Structures are given as C-alpha cells and as structure tokens.
Amino acid sequence: MNRAILVVYRPAAGRYLAQFRAVVAAAADLGVDTLVLLPADQPAPEAAGLPCHRADLDDPEAVRAAVAGIVAERPVERIFPLFEGDVLTAARCRRDHGIPGLDPEQALTFRDKNVMHRRATELGVPVARSCRPDTVRAVAEFAAEVGWPVVVKPYAGWACGDTHRVDSADDLARVWPLVADARHDYRVEEYVRGAEFHVDSLLRDGEVVFAQLSRYTYSVLEFRDEPGGTVSRKHDLTPPERRILAANAEILRGFGMRTGVAHVEFFLRDDGEVVFGEAAARAGGGSIVPAIEAGRGINLAGEWCRLELDPTHVPATVLGPETGTEYLCSDRYGRITAITSAEELRALDSVLDADVWKSVGDVLAPPTASNDVLGWYVCEGRDFDDVRARFKTIRDAFVVRTEPAGEPSCG
Image 1 (cartoon, rainbow, N blue to C red):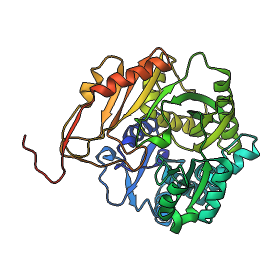
Image 2 (cartoon, rainbow, N blue to C red):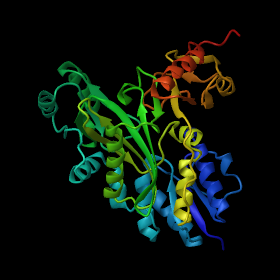
Image 3 (cartoon, rainbow, N blue to C red):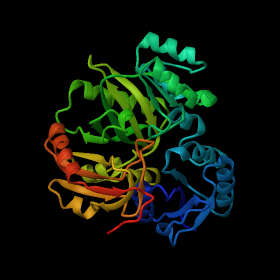
Image 4 (tube, rainbow, N blue to C red):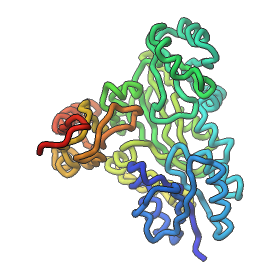
C-alpha cells in the first residue's frame, strides 16, 4: 500500500484550487497518494479520481470522527489544511492519531490572537497594546489611553471579517451593539500607524528555508475603501526590513513550527520599530500564492508538501524583478452585465498572471471581508514604486458594468 496524505479542502473557496492541485501534484511526484476530506455538500470536480471523504468541516467533532474513519482504513502520514479555519481541527486530528505536524498547543498560537500576542511578548517581539472588551467603558478607557482609533476584532478571525476600526466615542456607540453579545470572542487593539508588511515562509526542522518579504500598498483595515495590493521586497532591503525578517524567524521558531508554511504580518512604525501583527500556519491568502509563484517560481502549498514528505528537499527558487499583486474590486453593485476577463488582463503590459472570479450574471454587493473581491492579477516592475504605478494602469483597464439586481438585462 502506497504512502498517503490527507488534504482538508474547501472547493467553494476558489482561491485554494491552485494550492490543492499543487499539493496533489507534489505528493504524486514523490509516489504518495492523496486522500481528500471535503465539505458534505460541495462538488469538487478537481478531486475526481482521488479517494474522497466528506464531513461538515465547520463541526470539529464531525471532522475528527471522519478522520478517525479514514485512518482506520489507511494510515496517513501528514494532514494538510489549506484554509485558516481548519488549522486547529487538523492539529487535533494529528494528536488523535500521532501524525507529525502542528499539535493543538502550537496551532492555537497561530489561531488565537490573545495567545499569539502573549507568546510574541514572551519572545521579546513588540506587539500592539490591547485590552478585553468586557464593557463599553473598558473600550472607551483603553481608547483614552492609547488614542483613537482602536481596532475591535475577533480573537480567532481572518481576512478582517467582523473587524471594526473605531474612530471616536460616537463610532464606538455604533459598533458596540454589533459585538456586545459576543464580546468574549473579541479583543481590542491600538491602531498601529506605519507601513504594513507580510512575510511568507517555508520551514524545515525549525529552520526557515524560504522567506519572501512583501509590503502592502494600503492599510489592510481599509479594504472597503482601497484596493488591496502587495509588492515583494527582494532587492536593496533596508535595515528595518531586515529586522522584520529576523523577527519573523524568531516568531516562527518561538511559536513551535518545525516543518510547514506560514504567513506573518508586521507593522513598521515611522520611528523604525517593528511591531508584530498576526501569524497564520498556512499559505498566504488571496493572490499571495500565485504572486510568489510568478515571482519566485515555487507554489508555497506544493513546497510545504514536499518539505513534509522529503527530508532532503530544498526549494528551487528564482529571484527576478519585484512582483506585486492586487485584488480586483469594483464600487459598482448589482448584477454584472460586462466584466474584463482574465485573458484580457494577461494581455496587458507587465501582467504575469490574473484570475477573475466573477462573471456576467453574478450579483455584486459591498464587501464584508478583505478577501471579498472579484479576482486578482500579478505584475512585475523595477521596484515598489514602479509596481504600484503599474497597479493603477491595470486597475483602470479593469471594467465592470452592472444593473440593479432586480431588473433583467436589455442586452
């Protein structure tokens, strides 16, 4: 019987398709079979021909029961959760069956923002000041101490979902009813002013074998008002940027990751202080994976699989020019009557790759999370400023036309 891995995969989240295919291909190259655990009610044609099992992925106990049944039939060497919300449950399944990888204690450090900030502080890495929103007065007093705005966020959230920037006492009166009933699921942080960065890393045996530093072109919390872009920083790094890479390695080792993939976010204050934001034990979301694949020649999810299964593997990366990726957004809401295609975007100068998730007939509504977008593209340029300038040219070429959702099209 061949060696086997288990991939926990949610096909409805189209941004994970390339990661899924990369893991399957990497395992096949190494002669390892892929088993797939899918949601109970979602079709997954890309998994055709693979042994598939189903469970309610939002029910941790149902997932653990399903994995127990899978492992009883066939030994599993590794478990690969591609989605943030599956990281902790996968860790519990590893513990249940003695499978190597992140255990629940380590996974919590990557999922629970209360835990990760406490651990970062213990490691000597600066973090944003924070408090528990036990009462509305506690939040107001914290804001008086650190200054407005403050950020109210779920301690186990992702993609800025249910995250609120609160700019004043009046704004707090608006936001408080939205979180009050579930206040124990939230935390409050100071708003850190400065440039925002992320580091996407691969580790083997506790050592970083690949790390790509990138800088956001916008504030992640302003996803409703600004297109979301990020640009690689590969050349001529500044001393503060090098300190971010050093802090990233310290965080990952201190959080207990041995072999795996991680996405870690940092702030760089105007005075040069590096502040830890958040860490996730998964490949970067949105179009970060295709951007790194276009710019560095590797798929992070596929490389994670190879590092887990082949102890001698070394990622074969290229350097190349700076590359950037930006979400495709529109402020036109309603039913789509026309939209620029991915093929048309790829034909533009400097565009390396693109994907458009929406099509004619789909209905657009205001975004509720930072990854609630229409698609993405990747382009290249000389440096950060050049790539950001190219973003505007490509953004202006992306056209969406809509009509009110209740009316039929005349065309």
